Image (cartoon, rainbow, N blue to C red; front, side, top):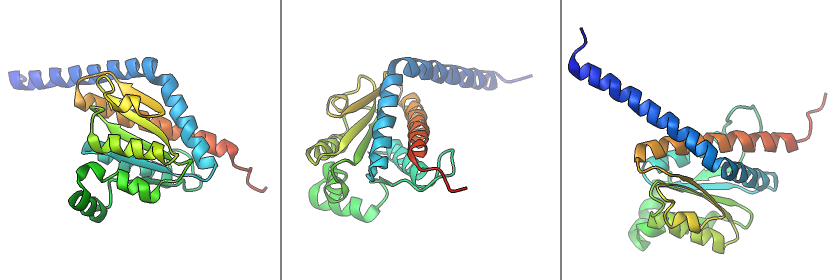
Amino acid sequence: MKSTSTEKALAHIVSSFQEGADLRLKVARECGPAIVEAASLIAACLQAGGKILFCGNGGSAADSQHLAAEFVGRFIKDRIALPAIALTADTSILTAVGNDYGFEHVFSRQIQALGRPGDVAVGISTSGQSPNILAAMREARRRGLKTIGLAGKDGGVLANCVDVSIVVTSTNTARIQECHITIGHLICELAEMDVLAALPSPPR
């Protein structure tokens, strides 16, 4: 016989999966056009020889590295490497800039160094209020980069300072993060399809 604690745990698992599934369907309905727009923006950037710069904090930092890896490696198709950088990965830069200029500038300073007009900067923040993400997106726009924001809750300030805003309207941080990586995967897949479609056919 299952213990009461086991039954509660199993019920919680089912409830969490159901909550996540319901939220994904809601995001698909509400954010589908924005996801397509973001993927098209990234595909156009890559086709023009630009690069993608990702940034986020905590779990969103991990998502930034995950998604950059999908572009540089591959997502579904075997194809050329696509240029993408996670601004969360270089501990020397993060600690030097954080120490000398303040944590708010750890990503915007890198965009000053690496961003070029036509590149795309992607900021990920479950609250939509992270000061260093907002600073990065503002710096990116000043420098002529296109910007995409992945946010949660009501989108926060981030939703209003990017070219394409994708907001997961939930207050549950874990569920927001789960949707963000799903959205990131869809953007990778759609952008990859567009980029491959634009490549010349291999010689026979």
